[in-house]
Image (cartoon, rainbow, N blue to C red; front, side):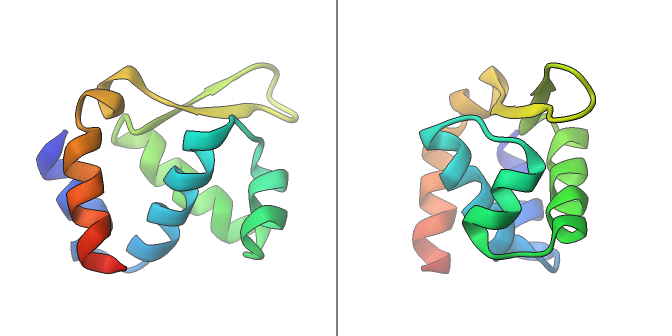
Length: 91
């Protein structure tokens, strides 16, 4: 997970938005529409980032397809220190 986080947040475009998404989801689970509103980012952009984060086991969806809530995974939580170190460099 540590390598995946470095890759997702620093080596690809969109790392800053992914950090922002993770920060918001750290506070509470939200659906894609609420994330888009909260971060003032387009819905399609949020969906793209959620798909990328989900494919790397950073977030997982729960609930019905419409209005699914996104949660941070336990696997991510075990690497939270790495995330905080990366995010510190991006701030």
